[in-house]
Image (cartoon, rainbow, N blue to C red):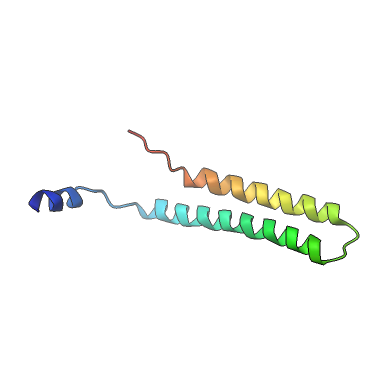
Length: 79
């Protein structure tokens, strides 16, 4: 049991900056999901004359927020 407690105590706490970065990355990924769903649902239920602008703006926001969110997560383990 003492060895287990020593193993737990040797873990380094996460820096606060990485925690904020991870939460912001998760937020951006959620934004990408919601915008994608909103664009699809809006185009299905509304009779819009200019769907091309809606698709282009929506996909631009999705790609940018998803890319930045995935870059910020950076869950690689360096050994």
